[in-house]
Length: 318
Image (tube, rainbow, N blue to C red; front, side):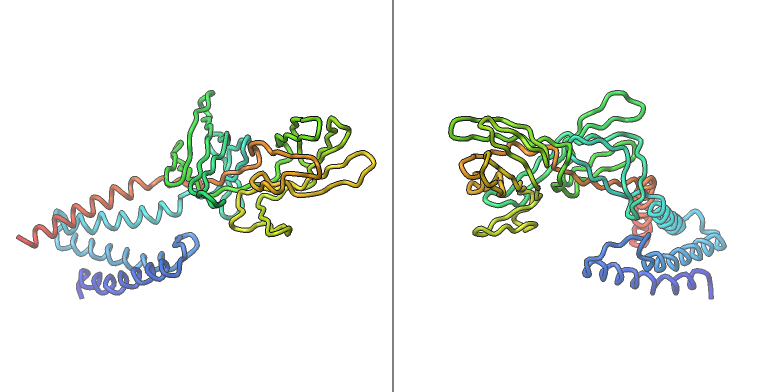
């Protein structure tokens, strides 16, 4: 049996098996990653062996200067570079609150990796569908400072519009709210004869103009109300925060209740009207970080492979 025939016998069952496996992954909704799923890698091995045998056969038959040789060689290099790109790629995630800075990301195993630049989250902006709390779009305003540059540059990161810095691509993937001890919440309170504007932190007790006190006991990043029951982490209440507040007049029993900026019925604590200002400092943005150093070479090799393939087909038509 010649090397060419042997390569064909190896190649023919390998490609259909690989295609079937990829279709199964797609239908099953699983993400194919060579670092975690060995099956694609196992199926690629016989394809690589087949290409090597075919190239050796063409060399032995002195058919090096042919479109067939160029096609098989470039395809072999494409697969090798693709595997090398998967192995050498850096992938991870950054979760950063408004006002915070970071120069590292976490990989899938929870290990921290440094970045050659510093990211500062300036502001997170969320747009909702009318009449609901569901996000229609979201984006993050960033400032990024490279190590060799003293001046930070502004960037806007949004869904399907990644930014690339020093070979690292940043993708906007998620968002959320969480308590931030450093965040001061702008609150306006109005009594019968006074109005106070405050900046309060979680757990802080503030003395109001009439001698009463106000404090924020707890915070829920997701809040919904059904009649008088509190339901947290409801999908429709995502990004709809609630503040559990305590209001107490001297010598009287305290009034404790949830104040929700988006719910007009939950803005009063007894006779005290409470208005929460713009949320900032408790919103966090989630970004995916990817660095694939060989991506451009893989793309170039696949283009060369396609050109050689087109040349082979053109010759056959002649």
